[in-house]
Image (cartoon, rainbow over all chains, first blue to last red; front, top):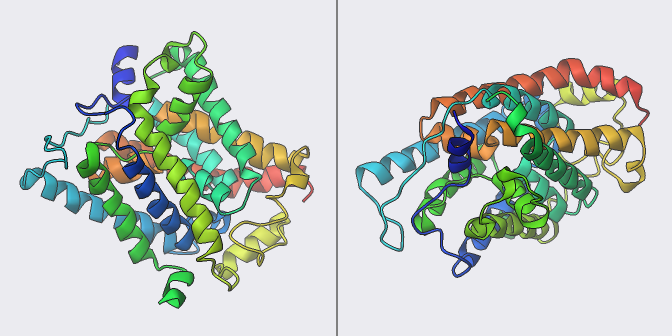
Length: 156
Length: 191
């Protein structure tokens, strides 16, 4: 896969990615989502440890249910030809395979087990009062930046 | 009612609500659910340098920054107004295994306070749990082209096999770090 293709895939170029106006709606969805994250305790370092130690069903239940509900929703959107609120057809960019899904996936897995957080929960942990996680977030930004800087030398 | 809200929410409620985020974002404006991209957009906004990967119009993806800003605010609301007054219930086997590794705080909240506190910032504990851990999350998710939300939830919901590869690797990496890496690394640090 060429560099250009990966770039297109990652910065989803959608017909109506409007500038500014109306973005507050996504902020509102985020608020709702952050509350769910904290209340279901999926931002807990302990819950992630339980998951990787196979000591609790909780996280498997959360992710599994989310996938099933997401799958049914997408099937309904496709079959009923549901449009966006702006009236545009819903389009989803397919995921392109790259070796990064293996190497990067493993590396993210290492980090997930150490920090007890994927990127979403990092933000929710900070909001929930674990202010030291801002350091983890800055480090995650550094990791993203270094990836961007050296990606041409990495296998994809 | 408030009692129901302050108690921990069961997995099927949380899973269903997280799953519904997928169609909600699509219907509100054709947005594909994904969170790790926000890290890229912040890099592009703050420190793009002359790196191709960060030179694009991040403002077009500003919705994603609103989304993670909202997640932070939601975390605050849930952590204050809807805070669960009871200590976290943790599987006994996990408590036992973590005690062996030196963790002692299991009751103060969602995170072990003996690891996640500012006092650890310039210690080996902070280096491992904040600096190295965070770096691996940021580097790994971007190389994989997504995280738990973009691949495991959005990708699998859309039956994308590359997302299945990524999700399996997330789990393999996490299991390896938990069972092989952490027991070794936590011997090098003193909690």
